[in-house]
Every structure is written in structure tokens, then in C-alpha cells.
Length: 400
Image (cartoon, rainbow, N blue to C red):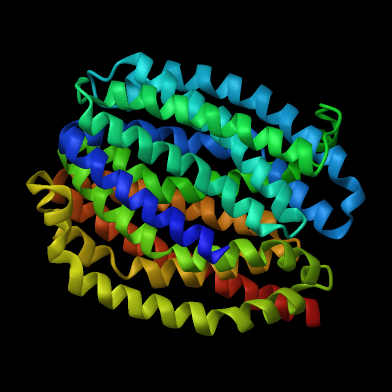
């Protein structure tokens, strides 16, 4: 998993450099605003069905066909409705002047086809076949790298609209390959919404949790583009992408351990806490080290992305502590999820998401991207404290 994620991160960074150079901060900022809006809605496109799949199959592999078919049916229905909704609200929430075609292409890519790739990866993850999960996560990234090179070198308009069309084609191809691979290696199942209906509350909690997570990760990019400028959003998003890339090894450990959290969590929080304690020293130490390296290496970023992104160096230095904060709160969150406290986790994340929006509304008009940085740091720090406090509180209640 680490090998696949590391290679994926390297490829992502490479194609991001090509896209940044081809589009510039203005066009890239517009594209990022659209993807950020879609990312907030994306978890509802599967309604947590992929997480239900992992939970049940990790405990009983005979349930695969039931929950796989349900995940596909749920995604097809939800993604179609959400794409229409995104098209209706785009003019209100996004910067003016963005073509509706661009919005719809990105929405279909990330709400339907990318989610099918995700669910396919979760199917293999449930069986602990993480080489397959890693390969499926890598596939769209490699295809996008090829598309980014084409955008850079071929004589086509260097616009966000052209890139969104290439983005759409690569995601459709990835989804087709993913579904074929699952059918060949794992089988299929009846396309039925009933399994998700039976666990509607829990699956909805999974979706709400992921959406809240995307809100406090991405809402600042939408708001920067709308309130300040697409250029500010592009600069900020570039630095955030570096932080996200640096988080890759920790994300790999989280992916590898996710099914195990459910297995150990059947015994309560004691089992999932034990797993978190085993993994945190290594991942926490890495996070401290990489945060320091990001701070030191930040001035080199304009050499990679071009002078349009000169301010990215300052943004990255401010955002560097996020690597450690994300490590701490993700392990607390998965500890709660594995032991059956998904709703509790979701409510905490929703609260932090609301706080993040309010802080951005307050600070962005005054301080621009610096306000977004402060909002991110405060939100992640409070999320870490709240999640670990809840872990300790629920653990005490289990012993009472």
C-alpha cells in the first residue's frame, strides 16, 4: 500500500506541476474551486456504501455480493441526482465566468466515475488485497499525468475547460477498468438499494463524516476563489497539495489498517485503541520530520510551479503543521469508527466544518490566504482535541 501510494503521490505531484504551468494560477484556481465544491458532495454519491462493504466483508466474506451490488446501485442513483444539484447551485457558489460544461464534466468525473473507482478499491481493501486497492488508486493518476503532458505540449487552448474534458476522459477509462477488475477477481452481485436502506443511518453517518472532512479541507479554496480571487485560491491550493502529498505514507498506513480497526473494534474501543497505539509512534515521528522538511524546502516551490505561484512558499510554511495534526486526528477518528462510534465521529467533524466556514467568512475578506491558513490550523487542532477526548470518554464509559 505504501509503495502504491508513494508512487501515486509522486505522479500526482508531477502532473500537478504540468497543470500549474499550463494553466497558471487564475485558470487553475477556477478549476480547483469547482473540484472543491464537488468534493464536498462526493461522499454522498456513495452514501457510505463502500464503508459498509468493508465493515461487513472484513467480518464475513460471504456478504460481498450483497454489499458490492448495493454499493454500485447506490452510487449510480445518488451520483446522478447530485450532478444535477451541483449544476443548479454552481452559479451561486462558484466564481463568475466559469462555464457550466466545465462544472458538469468535473461533477460527473468525481461524483460518478471516480466514486466507482473508489468503491472498487474498497472491495479489494475489504479482502485485504491492498495491492489491488493501490493499483486502482494509481490508475487514474497515471492517466491524468498523460493527459497533463498532452495539455502542456499539444497546441490546444490552455484553459480549465480543456483540462476538465481531459480529466473526464481519464476518469471514465479508470472506472471501466476498475469494474472489469472487480468482476474478474471477486465477482458481482444484485444491484439493490435494500442493504443500504437497512443501514441507512450508519451509511449516512459515513457519508456525513467524509463530507465534513472535505468541507474543512476544501471549503477554503471555494471561498478564496469567490471572496478573494481565483489566483489566491490557486496559490493556496498548490501549497495544500504539497501537504497532502507529504501525508501519503500516513494515509497508506490508515488504508492498510482500516479493515483491521473494524475487526478489533468488535470488542469495543479497547481493541481499536490498541491498534492506534501501535501505529501512532511511527506515523507521528514521520509527521514531525516531514513538517520540518516542508518548512525548510518551501522556498524551492516557485522553481517547480512558476512565478505565478511565488506566494506558495509562504503558504506552505504556515500549513506544514497540518501533517502532524492530520495524523493525530485520523487515528482518533478511525479508532471511533472501528468500535461503532461513527455517528459520534461524524457529529464532531460536522461541528468543526461549521467552525471552519465561519472562520473563513470572518478572516478571508481581511487577510486573504493567510486567513484560510489560520482557519485550517485552528480547525484541525480542535478536531484532534475533540476526537481524542471522545475516545477517552467513551473508553471510560465502556469500563464503567
